[in-house]
Length: 203
Image 1 (cartoon, one colour):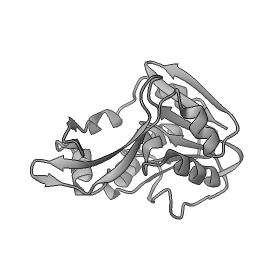
Image 2 (image 1 turned 135 degrees about the horizontal axis):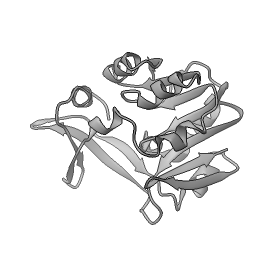
Image 3 (image 1 turned 135 degrees about the vertical axis):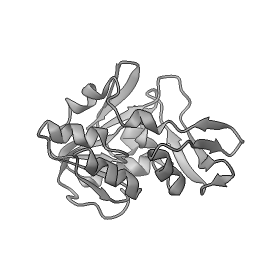
Image 4 (image 1 turned 90 degrees about the horizontal axis):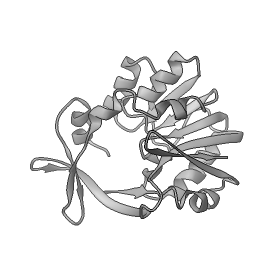
């Protein structure tokens, strides 16, 4: 989710996610600004320091900061970084696959709100995040409900006649996260559900 359309959506403009088959769904950015049921299940398991990958407007990064957990949000959209800072969190404009401060020293990495889909290759993403963690570090990820088909989609953002570039985004089912986690370099994967959300602990 990159480009001006995403930035405008974070500012309150309407936008759609468009799939290659022509299907469109609304991009609901407003829900990322306020606490979501189940957030506590993630936040309470975060150790200091925590890296929030794809932090968006920063609700989790800021919440961790308020709890006294050293945390950093990274996002590829300047507006998202600015919103995180405005909310009281620390954030930098970074791509997780490029240089990230504290590499090899993070205790926890968050892949919330489906961000395990970043890049369209969850195994590669998990390998990369594992490099950023310290020995014994963990990933907390949000996944799709059991029975959902794990897949990689090509999609882009659209606002009226304007459309962004196509990019890959993965959906990972709770049914498949153990297999994908092992392929990503993690020895153990546990799943649980909270308030209708499916969450995974990779360590």
